[in-house]
Image 1: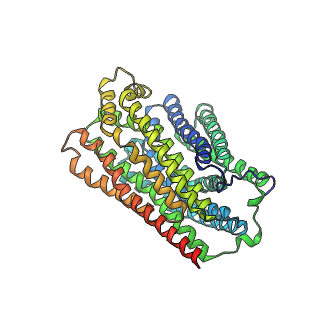
Image 2: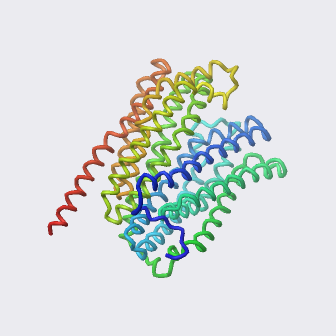
Image 3: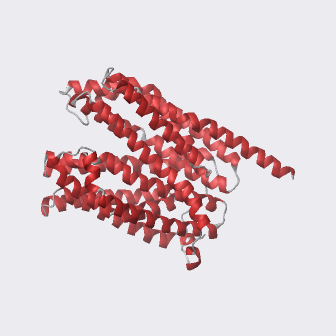
Length: 454
């Protein structure tokens, strides 16, 4: 392993390891959101409002498609982290190779399906006819680049599985800068319109994927694959799909839930739509800490589970739960008392009605942030141990709660009723997750006692 930059999380203080791994991931998530915002600003400033609307209207669909791919690749990488933790590097490389097969197969199949269904999907989403050409062209290019998306997500996931969360951050920054520069070049210099933004996104990801591949080749000889690693195993495919598909579905289910709630908000008119949108962007930024902690736990638990260190899994969960509670208190105070001023980042202070809607949302949901953080913790912990079905079931509980409550309150109660669907959905998601985690930990403990007595 000489010359590698792996990070063995089976030794050392759990809290310190988790914090050091989380910080780069958190910065990466925040950076991702800010450069996406910059992407929209460039389109709006240099092309016009219609272009901004066209790109903005694809947000939930983009989340649905790219989120599925990201979740799928992250799920595959869990087995990589487990075998790395077990110090079985031959098996680890085998699962890397099998993951590559599956990532290519899914990306090609999705490209074909979504290219064919591009316009029908957009019509189902009620995309305005005057924007149909731009939106269709934008999504068509994104679909054509899904193989690149799969390559970047897979390589970044392999790095994180081996305990390296800093390098994916650097490649994300490189991708973001290239994306913004290419946006300006394609739109301002070449006059490519909305399609220019899509090309910029795909090319930026391609460059980052290539850089990531070169970096792995130079710095991670432990990941150098041989012909033997690519020997097809249906059993290995099954194990990878058992983790990848549930994680991919979780992102997709979340996207569907967001679409449902957005539809309910739309009933109340443009002011509420704007206020809810601003509040959502701010909330997503503060919640990146929860997401980063969750992703960290997937790697930490995967390595320690593979090494048979369930005592460290338990300690890591306990430390992370405390971190989540501390950050929840901070965000509760910030969002309740200062959410109004943070809204000014997205709307002019003179838009008092919009600001009031955002503040109303914050005051309605702030108390539920500990539940949001706990979802990421227990979902990713279970996934790190190799259990994919129940974490996906948590997403189903969340989706059903949203759908049922939205059908009961949309247009029939005040806006507060719609806001309350978020806390209700977050609590519902934890119903299967927390009991199952404690069940699995008790089960693992009994098995260890049984093995020690043999």
